[in-house]
Each structure stands twice: as structure tokens, then as C-alpha cells.
Length: 165
Image 1 (tube, rainbow, N blue to C red):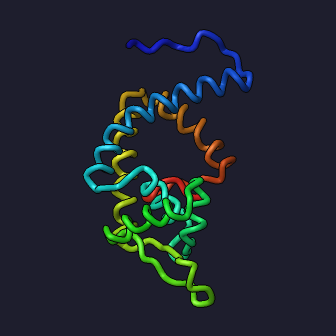
Image 2 (image 1 turned 180 degrees about the vertical axis):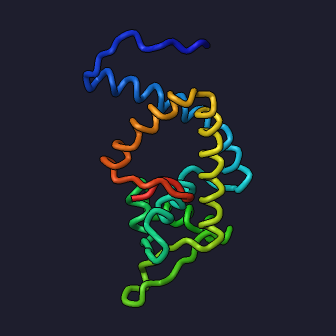
């Protein structure tokens, strides 16, 4: 299907949102195929990928409880525990009992988990770099100039482990 240029120069919130969604959806489709294959090869679900990403974003020393991870993704405690069990079996996370309440299990990334998230994000970045390589230098500059203030507004800092706050 041949892409067409936007037909209006409208900058209403709805028009910009529609254009942003169309762009996001299309780029996401281009990246998702390889991401889903990598996840399958690694034996990970989308939920586990999101959990790894959240743990990486929280920082090196930060631990989250299984309950907090589940709440972040609207999962029951049982579903969150199963997802964490799979990550633990693959060596991507460690679980530690809370010293004051043994019912609480705290989770943090292992070096292997950090490496896995880096690898997944590197694949996504490489796929998006394939797209940006098709742009002219002036188009890339315009895109970079448009993205920079949005990243700042959203308080997002790109890193090797993906977007972080």
C-alpha cells in the first residue's frame, strides 16, 4: 500500500493525535514481527517483556514486589507470580523475601535480565534505524528536532535498555 501525505495542515489536538497514532501503529507493526520472534526464541511473553522493561527502568538497585509488578500491569498476584517464576527460571530476575514480612517477595534484574532487555531493545532500535535510514538528511533532522522536546516533556531519556524515566 502506497503511503500518502497528510491532506491537511490542521494542528488540532485530534488531527495531530490521529497522525501520531497512525505513525506509531505503522512503526510498531514493522518492529513487532522481529520483537515477537525474539520473545518466542527467548521463551518470554509480552507481559514478561514489560516486566523486564519496568525493572530495567527502575534502576540498578531498585527492587519491586511481585504485587507491585502485578498491579502495574493489572494482573492478579497469581498471574504476576507465574510471570516472575518464568523470568526467575531463565535467570533474568532474582526474588528476595522481605525481611520484615516474608509474604512479600521483592524482585530485581540480574545481569542476564539486563542483557536480555538490552538485546531486545537493540533489535527494536535496529529496525527503527532501518526506517530512519530511508529518510533524507533533512527529514531525519526535522524528525530529531520534533522528537527532542517531546522526550523532554515526557521526561524520557533513551538508553541502551530502552526509554527510561
